[in-house]
Length: 202
Image (cartoon, rainbow, N blue to C red; front, side):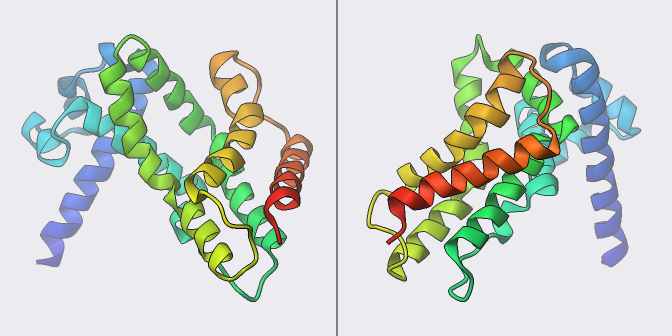
């Protein structure tokens, strides 16, 4: 059974890589599942077996790149480490995502593809927001450990990440500003963590 599984994984990987190239080159609307199948050297049926729709495939690509760059699902609360150190770890991982050129290129494609289609935008945002739950669980654990003040953990997580996105993500996506350099990244991470802890740390 192991050989067919490995072959399936290889085909899925080939589809993802082909789709990344097609979406980056041609945009969302102009890319077809036929083109992706041809580029990946698999049948169109194989593509649909892995991804029921082009929207599902595009969302899978964004999630794949997010996980590769940030690995946020590995972020868990650690009682023996300071909140500041843990927050810096989290924000560094988040910043890696925002400074990954492949990911940012595809987010621009996603924004262009969804700006006139609110239903598609909501669907993609819902899928991606599932990958931001790690910080919410961390906040709840820190609250249970009496290290953070009580409050809405989802709102707290959104505000924390929103500070980063307002400086290191949306200006680059919406206004074409360059990705932040290392010194800029470090400064924003430090300020974001300090502001969050100054208000919420007990």
